[in-house]
Image 1 (tube, rainbow, N blue to C red):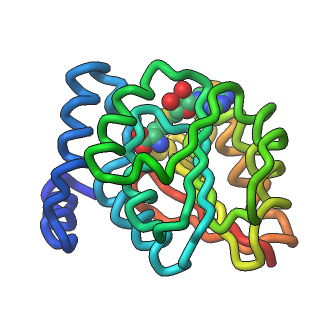
Image 2: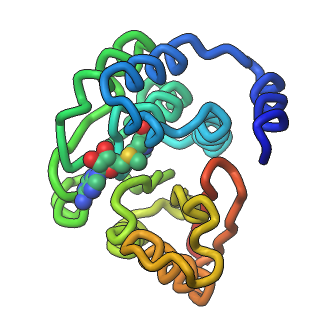
Length: 213
Ligand SMILES: C[S@@+](CC[C@H](N)C(=O)[O-])C[C@H]1O[C@@H](n2cnc3c(N)ncnc32)[C@H](O)[C@@H]1O
């Protein structure tokens, strides 16, 4: 999508102005420079918030939290007794995330687990089946996260996987870096499975939604 169309899309979100997420985007840029590009954009934020709201999700799991942008959008849509469990390999960005979560009044709904998610997802005793999982961490780990999360999903639960288009690099075979190769294999593997239903959507950098068939 070109910039003008993207800007038009942004202006027609309702509400179009999200002070806490805008502040978090600015703070992330200030503190972490170019890494701020890892935050999901507001288009995807609105999408995740809408998904949590319409599914009535009460337990959401996130793999890859960084400064907490996607967590912020999802946590805001949870009911009062809802919970978001976030996995990240480092706590370096957590103070920034927590500031935003506190400002939005959702910090008490969010629990953070620090360490390699592939080793920790199975160790956490979730209180209930997972209604929605958002995967946005290291790309070579995606297959492991899918394998670990699928059996933990509620009956109508869904896994949303981010960056599946990787700025288009997954198309063709020119790019051969580890992330692109892993994403290609992941996308091909999901498309070939007969135990899940999956749809790839061109939102943000591409998301795939996956549920049990
Ligand atoms: C793209 S960023 C997440 C962005 C976040 N969802 C947002 O919207 O702000 C990826 C995150 O995954 C984390 N990560 C990388 N490898 C990981 C692993 N093996 N286990 C858990 N987290 C990991 C990184 O530390 C980083 O914070």
